[in-house]
Length: 340
Image (tube, rainbow, N blue to C red):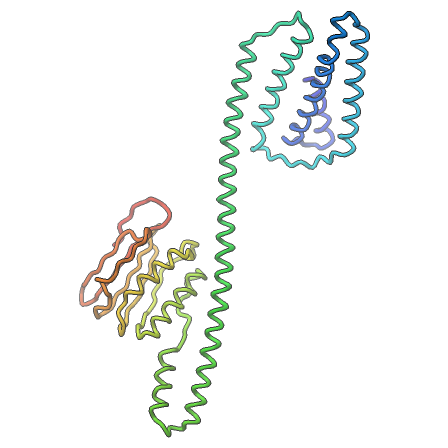
C-alpha cells in the first residue's frame, strides 16, 4: 500500500509537475478504500474459511472486493472533477491524521487476517494519542481561522455600512444645499419686489442670509467625519456660535467611527451661544486631543456631563487670557500617553 501510494504520487507529479495537499488528501482517501474493501469482505466471508471452504473463500472475498473496487474507481474517474481546493496550511494536520489512522488500521487489519502476526498495544495506543492531540490542535487552528474570518467579515460589513452612510449623508447634504440655494434666490426676489418700501423686510432677509450661509468647512480626508462635523458646525453657526475648525489628523478609519464622531458632537453641545471659538482636533499617537478655546468664557462646565468610554481625560484651563476646554480621546490600543 505504501509503495502504491508513492507510485501514485510520482504519477501525479509527473503529469502536473506539482503536488498539492489536495492531491495527497484525495489519494490518501482512495488508498484507504483499497485497504478497507478487502478487509470488509474478508470479515464478511470469514465463516467460509473457518468451515474449510478455503478456495471458495478466496474466490468470493478476492473477486467481489476487486469488482466493487474497480467499479468504484471507474465511477470516480468518470464523475470526479478533481476541483477540490485544499489550502496547504489548513489541511496539513488533517492529512497527517489521515496517514496515522490508516497506519493503525493496517496494523490491526493485518493482525486480524494473519493470526500469527503480533503487534504491540503500546504502539497502537501511542499512535491514537498522537491522533487525539492532532485533532485537538486542528480544532484550535480552525477556530483561529474561523475567528479571523469572522473579524474580516465584520470589517467588510463595517466598511459597507460606512459607505452606505456616507452616500446617504452626501445626498442629504446636497439636498440641503439645493433647498438653501432656492430659498436664497426666493428671498432675493422678495427683496427686489419690496424695493426698500419696507426696510424691516429687507433687514430681516439680510440677517437670515448672513446667518444661514452654508459652507463646507472640514476637509480632513475622512469622508464621514468631514460631512457630519461640517453639518454640526453649520448647525451651531445657525445658533450664533461661530466655530473656526483647525484639524491636525491623518486619514484613518477611526475618525470615521460613528461613536467617535458622536463624542465630538456631544462636546460641542455645551458651547454657549453668541461665542466665537476655535475647535482644534489633533492626533497624538493612538490618542486624539480635542481642544476648544476662546478669549471669552464660552463653555457650560456645570452642565457638561459626557459619559463615554472614549474620553480618557478632560480639563478646563484659563491661561494668558484664553479659556481652554480639553478632551483626550483614546484609540484602540492600551498604551498610555499623557498629552494634556
